[in-house]
Length: 317
Image (tube, rainbow, N blue to C red; front, side, top):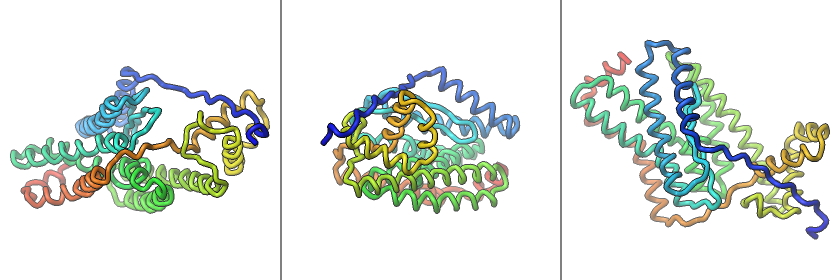
């Protein structure tokens, strides 16, 4: 039966090399763009933001290196944030969970310690830095794709995560956009991020529909491109084209040599990387427990701190 299907094209994977110079360049660009938008009077805040993001992403970076991810690199995106990228041939659920939490959990611990110390010794600049550590890392733990919390949700509820993520992403997108109108400083950036999340909702919806159609056709999309049979490739390609009319129009006007790599890449994007379920129930429950505790830390912390000193400092900020 396999002989009736044409040979699938080779997948051309672009493997960007890890580059310290590129990371440094993106950091400098990150600072310059913020200075352009907000001026030198916000320089302290920009440096604090850079430090918080760098430590967060460094946690992901080091965890990926420990677990032998390939082509690991860190990049900063002006007005948006930063990310660490890397790939692995065989993914482990336990390692994936550790890579995800290696970013926000240390940041929350550092932020809590800095806030405790700054309040006991009345150090305003350290209080601002600690608040940024807590705020950004807690936001990152929200169950929203592509944040770390969304990635955790994907792993914990792998079989049903697409629908859950789509619902969470939609509600979160609307909430973030609305909240942006009530933020006096940099509210438009919050609104912009909310619209960015809205685009993610559309992408998640499209992916969910394609995966649903593939499941109904008994096509296994939880695999790698190299393991795809010619039949599976052809079926997935049909689904991709049916959900992307613009793609069909484009490939109609180019040669087969040009369209094959493009279609191979599109098919590969639909696939979900296999994940070895090597995490025990106790390990997963521990991660969930720490996830919940992370949101309780600021509440508990504030109950023991001198709020009469904290609030005036935040009013000044």
